[in-house]
Image (cartoon, rainbow, N blue to C red; front, top):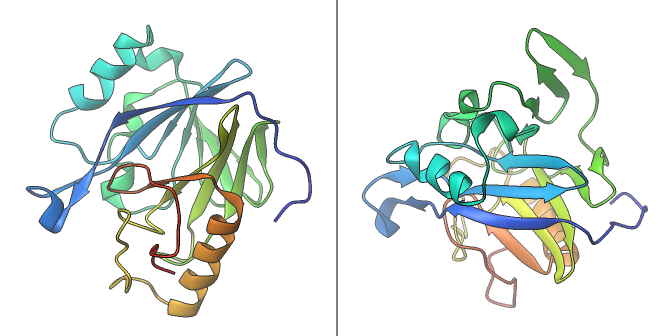
Amino acid sequence: MTAAQLGRSAAYTILTTGYVGSTGPGVAATVSYITDGGRHVIFDPGMVASRENILAPLRELGLGPDDITDVVLSHHHPDNTLNAGLFPKARIHDHQVEYRGDQWHNRDAEGYELTPSLRLIRTPGHSTEDITLLAGTDTGVIAFAGDLWWHAQGPAEDPVAPDREVLRASRLRVLATADVIVPGHGAPFKGDDTTPR
């Protein structure tokens, strides 16, 4: 982990809580809004039953699509990225590039700071390109972890993970850092002894 101290001025709102398989009728992403230092960030604007599931909660916060400055994609699976185009003025961040309009800037996600309270780290496991957004808030560190966990119960054995040991190492890294974990397709949870590793 990057040694620099994470600030504690970010705030977040879960715009829509996702589901997958037995927890819902199909699959939907957990889509989050994070703000700090003038940045308005959407994390994993993926599949949802209706785009209004993303846009209506944003409106309740007094924001529209053009207000979003950054979109962070945990990885490139469509169920986590499908609605990134809703935010035409945003910088798009992935594991190795920052995109905007027809331009891009190569950079490694590991340790990349959007603000002193918002940092990207590499957490491969569900795919080789996974990243996590760490947000320092006044209540602790929130890890927006994408599909490292689909929900609080795991799955313990991710059926699409290319390397089980790499997934375990990333899960342990996030558990050691975060006070709360926001998974890819479920409600936020606090890691404990029952959290799949």
